[in-house]
Image (tube, rainbow, N blue to C red; front, side, top):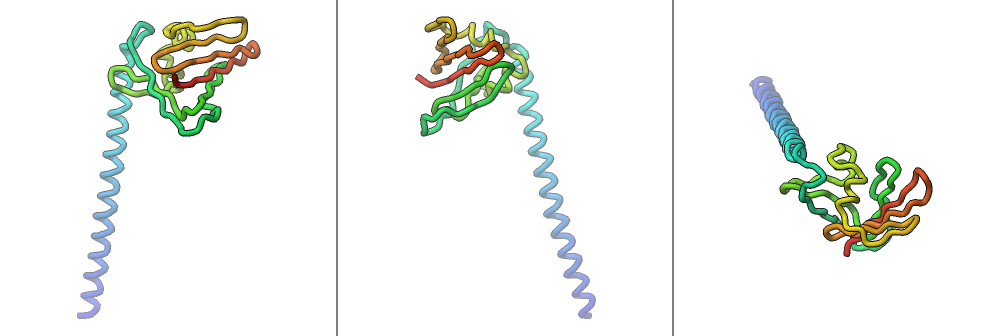
Length: 151
């Protein structure tokens, strides 16, 4: 009788582990599906994007006003003052600026052409777009710094 109860307890433990494992697997598959649907939505939304499209910039700010390296793209190195991240919002879909440029929805020159030119001399060009100021410093032939700050 005791061995029978022991075997029933072992089966119950096995079933409970099976149920927990099944739940975790279903949750994992569901999260993968959500991520895939988000990916499809982004790709479908940005297929219609061109350099005449209306978009806005979304800044994730930091409390500090130190200079932080955000990312590099081609020979442009992006830095932000008090900015953690910068994203493009188009048709209510957010996409990180780095990913946006790397997927070539808009090249870097078109991105700056869509901005308002504020100032330009030999090495420094200052642009304004939406709620951001972009200062492009041409230091060397293959090295440009882009400093981003909010108004």
